[in-house]
Amino acid sequence: MINRREFGGLIASVAVARATHVFAQGAIQRPIRRIRTGVLEIAYEESGPPTGSPVLLLHGFPYDPRAYDEVTAPLASAGYRVIVPYLRGYGETRFLSPSTMRSGQQAAIGRDVLDLMDALNFPKAALVGFDWGGRAACVAAAQWPERVRGLVSCNGYTIQNIAASVKPAAPEQENRMWYQYYFHTERGRAGLQANRHDFCKLLWKLWSPNWKFDDATYDRTAASFNNPDFVDVVIHSYRHRFGYAAGDPMYDAIENALARQPRITVPTIVLQGGGDGVNGAGRSDEQARFFTGRYDYRVIPRVGHDVPQEAPAETARAVLDLLSA
Image (cartoon, rainbow, N blue to C red; front, top):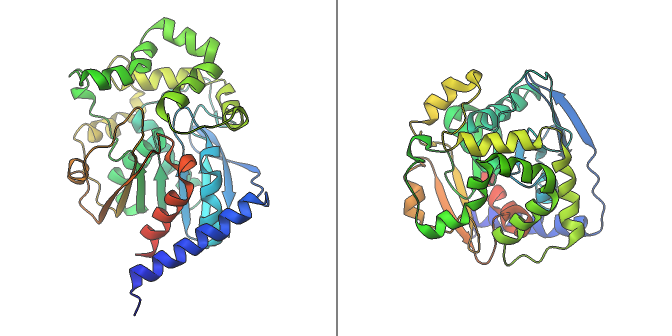
């Protein structure tokens, strides 16, 4: 007799296979929609039935919704309403006021998730994210667990401990983070401004050394870096996390709460690329202490930093496993 978990896994596998075939046939069209929050006009793409249970897929730096192109179809086919927003500073997402600080701090991107859910009238949603998007999802899950049905976090618990950022990491990890220190300088700001296309492409290569993406794949995403606020948001993000730039005062209460490294209580699956060139795979027990709800840790061999784009079937299956349990 097949049990509930096995049945859920079987359904997930069938859904992933069917939707991947549909995607390969080029049948999926995702027009950009827009909705306003108190701070942003957020551009987003939507798939699946409008009455389906919502799932938000959140990209990182330097990526965009194209990272989820092969993840959305299996989820939509399974009946979920899938929302893939462009984060602040990316694509067609825009600040409403020129006077708003172009903050990239963790509290801001986490609050953007909640604001988007409010604007779309979602009482609850499942959150999926990697890199910045994973951090935004972790922040939302930690701060507003009553609004989060479940969490799939690539790279694990990524809420920043800013007070501890002055402590040096191992030399190998310091080397991987060279770009962050570059962004702490005005030379780094100018370099990103002048060379954003080639700079971000280099990061893709370094962070996903086993992924042989072509120029067309990269260029589809790189168009999102032409956002007028991209450089300001990116630079602020990497300076704030080390304490070298003040945050937007409107997010002080959230940052103060995050400084306590809050635990995440919602059901969580952590996905880790075994070939991640910036955040190496750790041990499950190192991550588990941050998650007090149902928790699963999965390492995907050879996959780099952009887990959803490099391992879409595994990503979609994790979401379906999480929501079917």
